Image 1: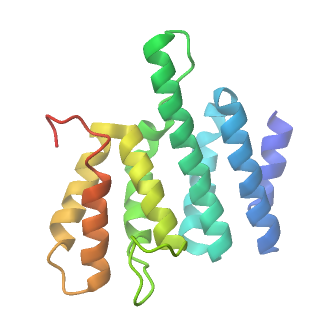
Image 2: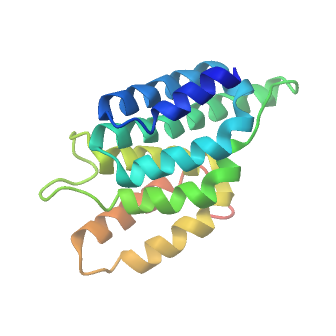
Image 3: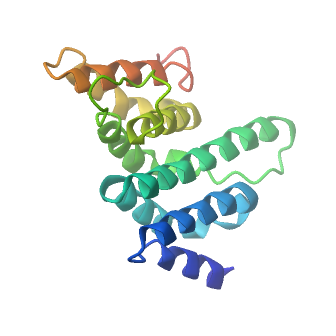
Length: 183
């Protein structure tokens, strides 16, 4: 397991963008199939994925966000199982990393293309960031709100349309995960 994670992690830094993208595709599959086994690798994966989300090519950034979306989906499913099976393994990775992930995703959702908003059918970095943000907030619940609410307040009335659009999307993404008392 260590060897595989080392090789796949190292491939995320390859000079060839296609190799970096495929390494993140592998990490998505690993997260989906071996969530119980990857908790110890999460600090490194957080560092690798956030750098790729912010600074890599479109396709690589999309796969790095897909990794976190997959972790969210697995944790949501596990939480449902925990309610029925107290022995289910739940690492609460998203709650532990949301303080680093949410600010990055809030930056990403502001990268809309002109004449395209986050509700369009176009799939790009901003749209993927929006989906990932919704999943992170849904998974982390109340822990994500102190990160999202100031962004919404600061950007809802902004001059720049991308900021207003991102604030509106962040507001919509924040209504499902947190408890109704907090919202």
